[in-house]
Image 1: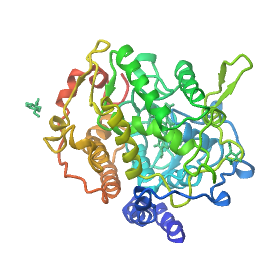
Image 2 (image 1 turned 90 degrees about the vertical axis):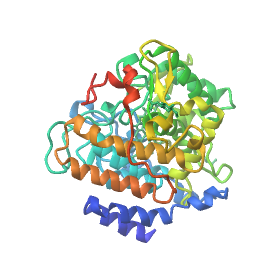
Image 3 (image 1 turned 30 degrees about the horizontal axis):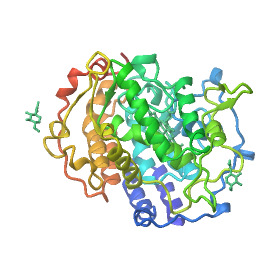
Image 4 (image 1 turned 135 degrees about the vertical axis):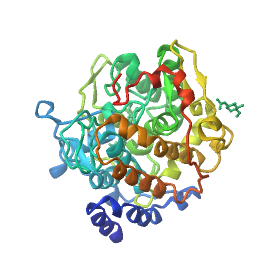
Length: 419
Ligand code: HEM
Ligand SMILES: *[C@@H]1O[C@H](CO)[C@@H](O)[C@H](O)[C@H]1NC(C)=O
Ligand SMILES: *[C@@H]1O[C@H](CO)[C@@H](O)[C@H](O)[C@H]1NC(C)=O
């Protein structure tokens, strides 16, 4: 662990230190062990997550400009002082915070934070909610960073667990009560347990709701194939309470409510307080050495897709409900990936992450925020190549998005992310 802390220091000094830092951590991320199916073990002292003292719950002050958005994990971290309370953080804040609170491996958090800063931030920092004054800056800014609430189709996806589809409900970050009630009821029917099976069934139902109700439903190669499944899998993998009896975690309704800022009323209805996501009392994170990594996320995502192959369909509705047209991965990648090879090895993560790296120049220029496009791109390319370095990915050197023009959920979006 010592070398990890040293490497964190190196990271703080600049983006260039990034790849080395990730290499170090990847070696100690415990992936090989998990892939071999070894049980994680439990150490109460090391896994207990404090929610008192310096980490006591402090609700956001929206009037004072605090940002909270679509991600309950990040909102809870900011409410408990594991991220800056205003909701704008640097790479170091996100990597350290997600490790300390949830046990997210640095290959995954490193990739996610660089992407956040590149697509939705100022290159070095980003907001977990809407637009925020820039904290740092990569060589001057041309516009205001929009944060992850304003990142539909770049980061944020349709068919999310509790958040609505942007073009259907008008925003993509507020909790929709009907979706929450559906999720809550499913785990109650499963003996007060929210496991991956419950979440996969819920996701299938949410997919069908988007398909049947959102004429602009769009499932993108990165947002739909990697971010959307992560949003479901994170619920069990990160929110579950780990213990000696349940080292992989047990997620019950009370813990779920706490992380989703919910209270239950006497009549069985719920009250939601936006932005008030809380770390429960006496709650334990993932085992040390069992951090949740990209290969781990890939395994979970592939097993969900083997159950519901529709999850891997890149494409969307064409302007009316239930009009989904799929685009073959071959057509997007010049034949490098196919529907068949996507579920093999780490190809799913390879495809998604390489796609977003290829799409990034247009996204960065389109959003018109970062003036140093080359600098932002090189940090993103570096983070992607580090994140996929151990995954034996095929080489993807260009993408073709021309067939996406038929999907209004993709083409309707203006380059700056608004519509
Ligand atoms: C740097 C790390 C992270 C980034 C950049 C990030 C970003 C995001 C984004 C952009 C979304 C919206 C995706 C969508 O449209 O569905 C999201 C949703 C979500 N995130 Fe995170 N996240 C991070 C870490 C975490 C952690 C540690 C947790 C732990 C519980 C978490 C749990 C979730 C969940 C459950 C959702 C789905 C919310 C819903 O629709 O109900 N995330 N996150
Ligand atoms: C987590 O599990 C431990 C052991 O079963 C238990 O004592 C603790 O109360 C649980 N925490 C939550 C928040 O449910
Ligand atoms: C898509 O790929 C198929 C075969 O994989 C090919 O026949 C077709 O011409 C391609 N279409 C386009 C628009 O590239």
